[in-house]
Length: 397
Ligand code: DP6
Image (tube, rainbow, N blue to C red; front, side, top):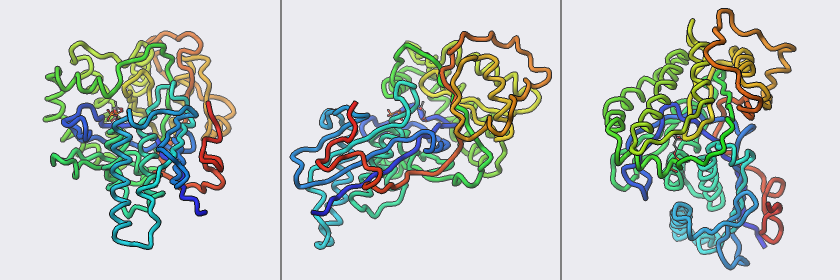
């Protein structure tokens, strides 16, 4: 019997112009356009195997080895409904195609990074789900078309359908057909741009993005200013900075946008705090590091973790600076930063170490070095698939 199965991986993306606010919560249509950098799947990715079979009696889903309900998850149901409808359309036109649209499916998905680390897993997760469904169903859609489906899983997921530098155009139509991701430049355009992720230790479970942003839409006057006056101009400037590989401009806009996103969170009533003392210390440290010329850019999403974008040549120095203030962080040296230098570079001359105290061991748990990279990848299910012969997960939690 032919096995209908696909296995893919999809990347994480970190926005430099943030998405925050929906004008339609069920279609997930945003109140402003946004722009992100896709990070390498060699370090961070979601991986998904989906099989369709006449032997299956119901649709089933396993996330990181734990079975989850599909019906309770409206966003997942929407992604399945959309892709199945598209499959049914092509089956109708071509009678020789196997009838997959009506078969039950098993979905097994894993992240290669701990969800508890607070790194955006919904973006890579939904991008991977939709991309894998499109492979299974052989849908004749490009990445922008697929982004419209992935957007309905999680807004930021639409940007993970592309590698490199990706804009999510907010669109204006009520049906969402023009609210999609487009690639501004591929990862090869600016290979020098790298990222360092600081996983900040945090016990508290914060407000989810989904809830937080709607409270902001309801209560923040500053968000209205951001939507109308700030983001449209900033998107244009950011696209130009990327096209020109103008790091100082890219960095300035990235930091200003992160700051404004956290300002609208503070302007939300009651206020939402995502950054903590460690996050704020990282801002002061990077600001001091940039005092004689912009060499690094920080950005923070809906949590305390920092992502620092910088040209490759500054990375060893940035790591040295971070290690000074945050001892004991494990370093994920997958780009071989330390193997290139036998000793860490000294702190830059005239760096004023008084900008921040030295934090306790492990305040930053992990530092991960990565770079911009490509979009979703197709793997060979026979070798890399997550389901066994019976269509059940090979690994359970
Ligand atoms: C701060 O995409 O997680 O990371 O659409 O409700 O699933 P939903 O929200 P989500 O929000 C991401 C918010 C952000 C900014 C960004 O990625 O642009």
